[in-house]
Structure formats: structure tokens, C-alpha cells
Length: 278
Image (cartoon, rainbow, N blue to C red; front, side):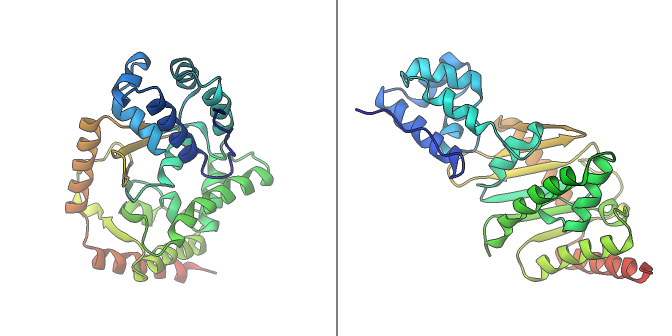
């Protein structure tokens, strides 16, 4: 029987890799738990690899080839899958985000990437890399705007964002850029494409004062949580850890303004910025 074909990285490569992994595992009669044991990972982690919600790293790929007798297939294709337009600390989260059925995000200081307008994104990247060439900034902005095409589908994924009021008040790129950025969020909200709440300064201390949270749910895999800091990021799949972050997000939603009042505040702040335009 011929072996599996190498993957084309341009056509849903992780989903294809996952399908090949499931096929190879079942061919040798191993359960997900049995394959996970020599890798020192859980059966649920193997399930996430097969569902395409987690990236296969090179060290696992080599061991899987040895265990399943796949003649270096997973190692070869793992190297191809490692190529990404995103920074290393965010690449795996971006790939999971692309196949999530629901995304819930708390943003403490800036508009979430999926909701950023082009000028806002450009100002953010320029602040991150003040000496970068325009070509580098252009590439970063293009990758961010490409991510936002997830919202082209009228219903999936569900996107629910809780924005700290600081997100609205921190002037990124100038008043005109902020007015456009907030109107973009308001427009998506009025079209019923996203749900947005604002956590006002008046709410005082809250459950996520130390950083941002992104929660991702999937139709056929366990949920994930992504925690991010300056040039760092961590994807969590431990059920207890994810559940704790889900509770944190629920507490934030309970303290935030209702969606209708949040929309009114966003539009009001956008108007304030518009009136500052020269």
C-alpha cells in the first residue's frame, strides 16, 4: 500500500495532517491514549492534533514516525507546517483561531487583532517596531487583515469581546485613526456579526487585571485558552486551567456594560475623536 502523500501547506495543512495521523494510528490499532503514553502527552492532546486544533511540533513528529512506521512523513510535513506569517509565540494560536467555532476575548489595552482597522493595526505595529522598514510593517498589517477575514462568514465563528475602557481611551495613531477604529467595531456590532461589551473604569478591580485572555471553542475538540504578554504567548489545554479562565471571562462579562450600553459608549467615544480631527 502506498504511503500517505506529503501535504500541500497551502490547503488546510493542519487538518490534513490530523486526518493522516488518525488514519496511521488506527492502522496500527492504537488508541489516542496509547499513542500519547510514549510521547508523555495525554490522549486528548493526540485528539487535538488529529482535529487540527494543535500544531504538531518536530520532536513529536519524529517519535510518531517511529511509533507508527510512517517513514518520516510527519517529520517532513511538520517542517512545512512550521512556516507561518505570524510570530512564533502566536502562530499556533492563530491557526487554532482559524478553525474555532467560538472565540471569546478580553482585551485590556488595545483592540483585538480580529477587530482592528487597517490604520489602527499599522499604528500598533509601528509602535512595536519603530525602526522597521515599511515593507516589514506592510507584511505584518496584511497578515492581521487576512486574519480578520474569519468574520466574512455571517455566523461563524461566534466572536464575543470584552473591551476594557482603556482600549477606547488610549489614542493609538491619532484621533482620526481611533474614530475609524471604533466605528469599525460599532459597524460589526450593528450588523449583529459580533458581541461587544465594555468594562468601564467604574467597575474597579476585576478578575483579569494582570492581562488578556482569549478562549477558543471547537466543534470536535476540547477548548483552548491563549494568554499573551509582550512578545510572549502561551496556549493552554489543561481542562482545569481552561475552566478557570472561562470563569474569569464570565466574571468580566458580569461586570461589563450590557451590549447595548457598550455600543452607545463606543459610538460616543468615536464621535469625540471625530470632533478632534483637524
